[in-house]
Length: 249
Image (cartoon, rainbow, N blue to C red; front, side, top):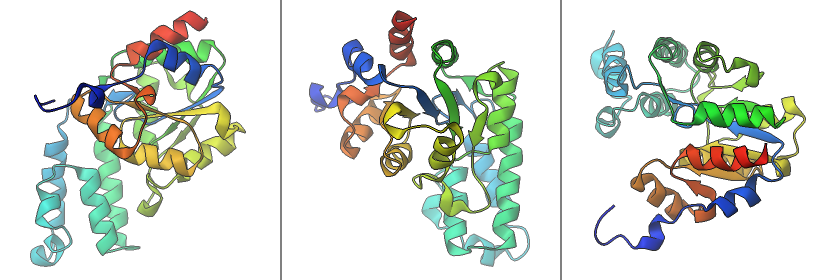
């Protein structure tokens, strides 16, 4: 937030907005890294990104690094790096190897991931209300399952859909959302997608699913506003969601 940032640009949902939005929710789709936990909090994403570059250097160094522009190398985002390499070298054994390597790092990171404040309470509250839950993530489904089991939350998530070797199906593609909707027999109009990235919002739009943005920083609030998300569909803290759900019990 800057001194020039208008107050309206930081507006988020009121309790009444959330009550209206969630009153008809029977199914909830969760993004994983962000709304449920910070996956690489204990194992920095920047460290994983450096390891990714080291992996690319194996073999013919110049040829492999040409697959990754300097802007991506500096991004410290292993997901963005993987997608960039896949675009330049699609349908190859190399992508399979890199995706499997990242899956391994995500599974390892699940042991040291930090809980997103109030996420567990929201999950339990929705579960107590009979809302069916699923995970739709660009991370490995195995990593998400590992974390949820360790937290005692796996009983709430019989459906977990994540990244495959076909990286074109990652969000913003609605593939994982559609799989979850089909598995639950869910009506999109009775479903809510909870995500913290613009790719989550785009995927929800493509699946015709209402969206709630989790934006824990001013920067994210501004990003969602710029993307076209209404302030009534943005929360800074999952405590706001928990409080509304608690009043419904």
